[in-house]
Image (cartoon, rainbow, N blue to C red; front, side, top):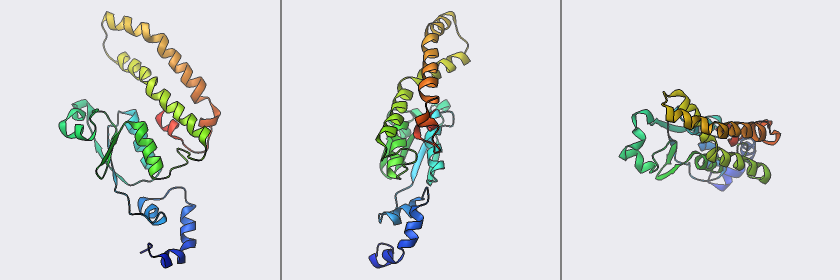
Length: 203
């Protein structure tokens, strides 16, 4: 009914009040934008997956209504034909919204922020801060997997060859830890903010 111009104008004070709220659910967003309500997102994830937890945390913190389905990677459900139609790369997380599907956590995080105008998490009006967040996300994608691999290897029984390989890569992984600490975790411009950013969800 708020698509009727006269009704929309008569409730402008109400809309102004709602716009000041930090987050809005999909119904409120559709009224404010005078657009159809977005179809609900379905999140395909696994709790052991750090990228999955980052996407799920964003949806929860932003109070976005969503469905969720656990893909049991320990049982190789991510390699099923059905899931491969959603994510040909057979990884988690993935999302589906209507007929639209998307995989890779950083792409999903940015899509959600831009779709729902979550500027606190991923600012559109502060180019430098946005670039710094992107910088960490790229670092996370390219470098942090070394730390994950190191931890996973440490949990397994290893033969002599694996132990030698682990020792050989130890220096690289220590350097990665040091770089993460010095240039991201202790950097004021991203991590002392009063609001959570995408970069912090991925740490």
